[in-house]
Length: 147
Length: 147
Length: 147
Length: 147
Image (cartoon, rainbow over the protein chains, first blue to last red):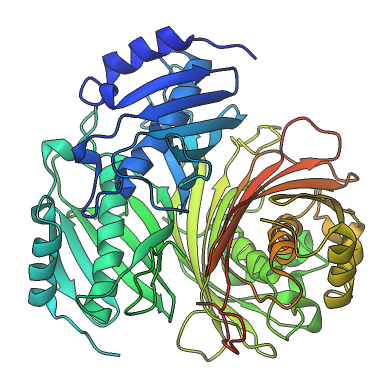
């Protein structure tokens, strides 16, 4: 087990492939099987009432596990989300960034699975839990993914 | 079982409470336990490669089941997403609206559950499946929801 | 799309590979993308209070989708459960069989997904919803599956 | 936050309410928001091929989170499973006990959520991940639960 991309290489690659949104997501920490990522909360992430929206939390979980897979498999790797499950536990605070802690639970030949706990920055109790599964098409395949 | 809001009343209420995004979501059909909703796909719903993004599909499922609960319980009802699970089955087509068919599986005293199949408009095979659970705080409560 | 095994062939094959439990599960109906299966409820499926246990409902969903995959792919096919999500909607009746209606949502190269609604026999409202994902190892592979 | 039942009291209560199966499940460790539980694997937990069956893993996750809720809320508390999601990551070893580590993520007024990682005893990598949601009917209510 070792990283194909370190924290700086991963951040640069995310900026390159997600030019529209990469500023929303900041890699805070990266190890061989964990990643910590910050969602820089802006008005567009909020819903009426001022809390972070569900789709924004979904996006954070998805980017988090995807980035972990990239960091291990390298730039050219394909990975397509096939399953997600989320529990929304507490209302996140509106004007506060979200911090996501992800563990890579499996990096197999054809599937990767990670889980994520999210916190309003500084909070002790998590506001959401997520797990995401990715299908990893064979290298060199032109396969349309999605298994 | 009967509807508290008909299709027109529901559409008007969604426009009022979601002024930023209501034009994305169009109620196509409504019965006592099903709703069909269209996501009018714009550039902001796409990700690199041109397919509809995961967060946009999450948003469609969430709005769909939430709207079904509103249609049954009425304007003032509170409902907070507590759980979601999604299977991403096929790549949706980029320049094509998504059509979501939702069934209300349960509308209990404190929980509501709906499931959703999504299709690229005109496609025979679904591109995603979702189920969403909502917590329904007691009426008149100022409870912060989330169970 | 066509069936590799018809209803009788599928029932015989299940009896052969699951000698201990096949009598619990009866294939009631089979089409190219749906299957209906009955759990013959016995005391061992119940928990204190007399309702059908969660593990028994999980087993019914799992057997149901697995059988649908077998019916399409044939006897020698490998398929390993990689993900399940379930919503428990209503208390099933204790002394009553469960009827599960399954739709095959995807049968891809490497993944299959089905969803299931379960009813106490004769009831109008479902007692549970499930979706199950299977990893399909390449044919002829000795792969230990699980992706 | 404090425990209503300590490890010994919880074990005794489980033996009393689950006389048929309590010997399968051993509480190994208990803190205010975590529990570790062992599934003593017997032939009846196995499926063809010799690995621990999916329903047995479901049962372990369910008992684990349920026990954690009991330990916090006390003997008379009602709690009904409303949602589960599971990822099956690796084949568990057949003749080996399963060890489940559960975290209580939320214990609210009406909902409790826990997540679980399971390992074949002695293994470094988890064989399954689960999260379970429980509906907690109001105390003193005769409500049939299930929200």
